Image 1 (cartoon, rainbow, N blue to C red):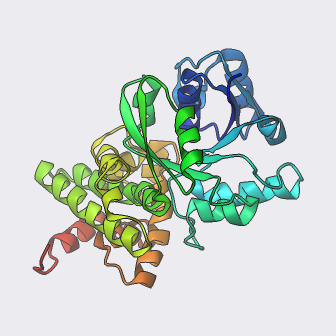
Image 2: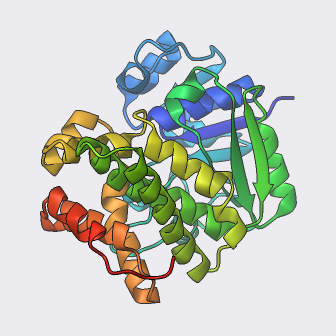
Length: 335
């Protein structure tokens, strides 16, 4: 009997991950916010709003009814943007559609909630009673456009319960995706969230015409920022040197397939934030996450100059050229 999974969120990442699960032999129901999207996936096996002409496995079905999506599910995969996740969960709960999850949950969400500085595991625990023993999180160098083409990659799945983590990793056992397991939930969540912020800085450097030396320097210093914050919150240092940390950071910062990189690149070319966001056309989590990360860092006394630079640009209308100059003029200090 195949595993039945509900993928909650039909954006590009949620849809592509539904393909991964289907290719691994799972029965997949994809929940979409709009009925039009669900109908296109059901009837055409495509999600043209996010994946164009890409054909999805015929075994994937879709619905805009959350109760129907979860009915009989052996597990849930959450792919709802971080800044609307709490609102979405509260809407389901107040409507009596979902009151709690008693099945394993895999989070694909990469962000920190603005205003509360909460990680995704904390939001799910607060709003839908997902206990730590059922929560898992995935992060790695997993650009959705490449996974849609079934190009090989690795990823990390972290959770507090080793047996649950192994079960969730088995869901994802597609021929082109190698899942590694971890018990460092905090480290994987922080790595997946903050890399989007650093990718905006690196993209801006590309847009300004800087070369590979600058980009390599920013990625390396970005990894140092992520590691400082993650370990201050209780994450394990080794996590940030692996696929969830360095691997995801390099892929997101270096590839034009990354939404956050493209947004930063637009800022570097002189677009304002609204223009850059419109050009990307999809959610770039790093914009909203930057302020939450900056607030966390300030509360913990963690130095994160690249993150501060992003906040200065997206929240305080600083010029990207001024921010770059300020970063390059920092005083001499030990690495």
